[in-house]
Image 1: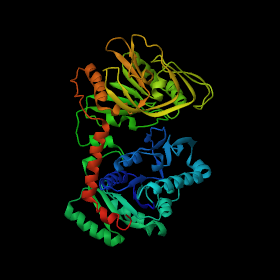
Image 2: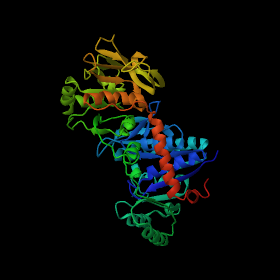
Image 3: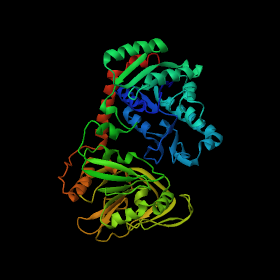
Image 4: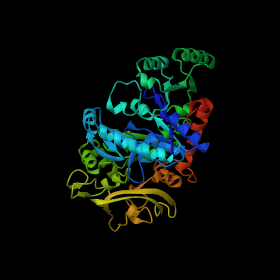
Length: 498
């Protein structure tokens, strides 16, 4: 099978390319086309963790859902996960390599990244008829390996049409576009197919005149003009904000997510983010905890290092006081293991050999071995309600030992090793932990958990008879497809390449 390709990229990093491509993926999938998203390389701290425990950028996971396919590492073979202003974790083929600077990347890993990208392209081209590719920023950015690899060189590698997306919401959009065209390499310039104007606020009559002028100046067609819409006013690649922005919700619960230095996945909390009564707060280790209704300790790519960092942080004493005072905390996968008494790494598989004290909130012990579990699971709840079906996937490194549970602890599922809740007896079980990713995506369970928090605040319970998050996500993706169909000339965009 010989696949065609098209590459969309923005004149700025906030042009909205990710969202437009997501809608385009959905629209073409609805037409029955075999399409797949692709971004060679991305720079982000928002990653998605596959059921196999591999990481890719969340934006490409979102686009894959739009295309009606499962996210896979080939959709984003090179991920640079930012750690601070100077360094990032290099993730190749879904697996973390090491922390490095841009200079390290240029000198030591650029050639390897090219090979990983080529292999991913080879596999996708063999399975799909059209690759919808996203660039990494402006294609005219002066040569910086961490950026150039994802846009200009990709367009030249694929020899595919290139479309520029212009953010019209913040002023200066036409100037950014004309400046880009004036310094664009001639070989890249020759691949340009057209322009999409995004998030415009001008009256239609004025916009029409501007488009006529712009096409005359650039000799490029404007293939689409998307107005500013509340649905699109979001953090780029964030379905939670896409949904929330149109709801104007009344927030009554605050849930704090600890932003660990090596947090594995932000997508764990999308299902909470679309809840109209919930506000998510992401807290760095230097931040003050405040008084949230619940705290979530997420999974980690480097559990021991993040546990040590948390112990040494100013946030830890506040967290300890919060939990000892009856505050609710939920640990997911690596976060669940951190809630235990001891984490032992006899062979230094997590980076540091030794025996490390956990947070001590749950009576569990973890030993890191070569054992890794990564599998889809369907289980049934034992607590707080018996008999709810739960879909998720188990990702576990090493082995976590759960004791014979005393009276003030309960197993969460019929597979008793998957989760535990504890604390005071009665209705005050407040320390939750599990090895299941995707738990919050189960609508009835999520609402039941939120209702326990609402009960503590004296708030009315929410209905629990709702669908799972994936159905809500599909509704959002369908809305994006409608926007693209209405405001972009898709036939002209793809003319000659389908």
